[in-house]
Image (cartoon, rainbow, N blue to C red; front, side, top):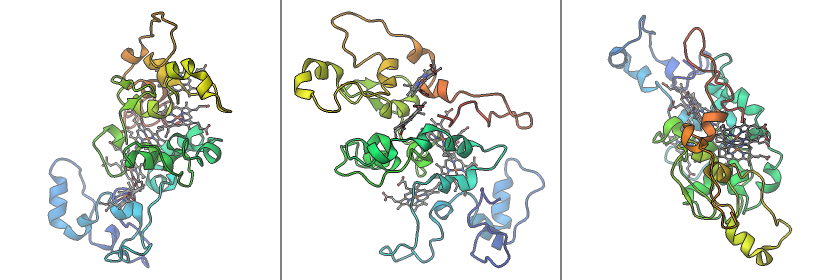
Length: 272
Ligand code: HEC
Ligand code: HEC
Ligand code: HEC
Ligand code: HEC
Ligand code: HEC
């Protein structure tokens, strides 16, 4: 109930107008039509059912009508989501994420703090870059790891799993039209230069950062943005063969949970 409703706090001294502060009886049987019945029977409690603004932003009573104060919280920390999604045996994404390089990345502080790199190396930079119409950032916001709300948009269910982005363009302008969800990964995991231009004009481009940047998996998988010296180099069929490209391999489903027959503990999912 704590995770599927708003303001739930069973402590009797916490009278916050949350779900548990109103009459409610859990139905003996779940099924079609039960929700509508509950709305009729327990209208006050049901108004606080499901995940609402305050589930993530904190109590907003003092914020109402006072947009100038800080009486509400907005942050991208994994804890905002882990409060519900970290539930031991079935919901293990936060535990997996905790030990992933997206969480522990050594480059967050360095590259994430630089305006030119923050849109890839910092969760806050990536979100700001998307909100700003994918234009170069003028300054880097405080760097944070690649958290849940970097990849997931808490306010938009357009894409599967509320992914923030399912499109990608390589740095040479090539628009990736296969790979579905994997294009979220490619947006960050791609070369930072137009390879042909960079190679042909290398004298103009010399700097202390000269040379290929690591993590060009997107370009390799798509088979574009490479110098081929005039040869026609064949590309592996993995982009066509694997649903969701990067996600298909790196977040592949594991064995089903015996009780629920769902693949909750997907091998690799969120262990990136
Ligand atoms: C699942 C958690 C979650 C829920 C539910 C949620 N938000 Fe958010 N909200 C966030 C996070 C995380 C951010 C910061 C990242 C972002 O802006 O996408 C945010 C950002 C915001 C912002 C700042 C946007 C900006 O550009 O600065 C506003 C305003 C906001 N939310 C309002 C709402 C309202 C109103 C609701 C309910 C209708 C709501 N949120 C529901 C998690 C949530
Ligand atoms: C108050 C508890 C709560 C919080 C906080 C919360 N979630 Fe959820 N989330 C849920 C529940 C419950 C579901 C399942 C809803 C359902 O299927 O009825 C869910 C579903 C999801 C889904 C699956 C959507 C789908 O398409 O299957 C994603 C992705 C998700 N949450 C991401 C987030 C992120 C990112 C945050 C933090 C910004 C967050 N959640 C914060 C409770 C929460
Ligand atoms: C917002 C940009 C961003 C997105 C989106 C993103 N990544 Fe990453 N990823 C990074 C960065 C930056 C690092 C390296 C962090 C560091 O070293 O500080 C990384 C690290 C990794 C690593 C570990 C590499 C190692 O050295 O061990 C894997 C694997 C990975 N990402 C796969 C993926 C996959 C698969 C997706 C899509 C589901 C994805 N990434 C989405 C930015 C991103
Ligand atoms: C690097 C990007 C990335 C990060 C970081 C990330 N996710 Fe995801 N998440 C994904 C992708 C991609 C999928 C879709 C996987 C698929 O389709 O198999 C997904 C799926 C999900 C789902 C839906 C699973 C389902 O079976 O429908 C939930 C819930 C979720 N993530 C929660 C979280 C939480 C909580 C965190 C933080 C602890 C988090 N994610 C961090 C990329 C990410
Ligand atoms: C056909 C399955 C497959 C696809 C598709 C795939 N990968 Fe991988 N990836 C792997 C395997 C397996 C490894 C481990 C290779 C090794 O350890 O030698 C790996 C390694 C990596 C690493 C290095 C991890 C480390 O610890 O050094 C990164 C980063 C990465 N992949 C990201 C991506 C991205 C981004 C995409 C999409 C553009 C992608 N991968 C697509 C299977 C795949």
